[in-house]
Amino acid sequence: MPSIDFESTYGVIIIQDMNIVSVDANYARIYGYQSPEDLLTNSNSFLDLISEDYHVAACQNYRDTMSGQREPRGHTYTNVDRNGREFTVFTIDHLTEWQGRPALQVTVIDLSPAIELQNLVRKQDQMYYDMIMQSAQGIIVHRDFKPLMANPSWVKLQGGKSIEQALKLDSILDLIPQNNTNDIRKHYQAIVSGELSGTSTVVENIGFDGIHRFFNIYDNAITWEGEVAIQVVLEDVTQKVLLEKQLVHQANYDEMTNLFNRRAIYEWFRAHLVSDEHLACMLLDIDDFKLINDTYGHMVGDEVINVLADITKRNVEQVGGVAGRWGGEEFIVFIPNASPKVSHQVSDQICHQFNQTEFKIGEQTRFNVSVSIGVSDSRSCEGAVSIDALVNLTDQSLYQAKACGKNCVCRA
Image 1: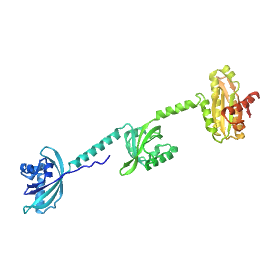
Image 2 (image 1 turned 135 degrees about the vertical axis):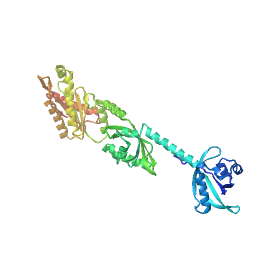
Image 3 (image 1 turned 30 degrees about the horizontal axis):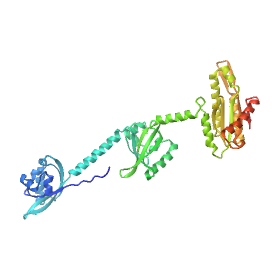
């Protein structure tokens, strides 16, 4: 909050035998009079200017100070001026003389501006506190990830039970997946150093209740108890993130097999084409698939497709490759930098494992299915390497596998 300047008025009065013998203009105005003469005319005694609650104390203070039993000191009083305005003053006593006789000089400082400022600050502090505590957005203040303040919404969003539970955390990084903490530490240092300000970031959390959630956080550096700290405002975007992930998945994966679809395969190939990697390519085609559909029905045909998809994915991912559904009962595989030995081993394993899988229909019917596989390498392409050129080369190997009796692997 910006600083607020205020000016306070002070006035002087001289008292002798509890009577007012002199008063300046400021003192008169503080007590609601237009001039010193107005005050002197309308006041018979110094006590007329003091609340009755303080009369006894004022008389005792006057006698003790004048007799030397008490050193002059400061006092604070709450008064009501002639117009009914309540105000607070701080008074400082001084021994003096008036017309050759001892008197008491009292300097009065009007504390009303300071009191009003204090009340304003308290009101603003309370409003800010209420705004923070009642906000539907989660808000936390931390220094080096140690919580200093948290509001109820933050606790609720984190699946917690109380603010006390949150403040007992040694570090809010305990609520972040371990693989994300290094990036968050770097982000924190950038905020503290002033490199970043007012940023918005989506982070994953693991709440007190163990549930994974995603939050959009807005963080900035603030001063907290004289030192730099970070204020974080967060909103739950879990449903939005999950929906976006679902849409991305649907756009890139075949719905039935959960393998890359053709569009994603092209995207993956283009991303790897710019590197120095060479690619082993495989095309897989289920043998006599139309006969399977005609004999056992399309539901069984779908099961056969899914089994080959699972076997292919499992074997290919073990060597860092990717698999996709190229269309119908046909699949495609790419393995970066695969040696001939690796590509031979993977294709032979897929062919063997799939042919050894027994499919069952009811209690009586059992059958096996085979797959033909063509294999090639991008280094065997003539001219510039493209996905179409590589697939055409691999397709020639697949055709040879079919011509050789199926249930086998042929290599370019």
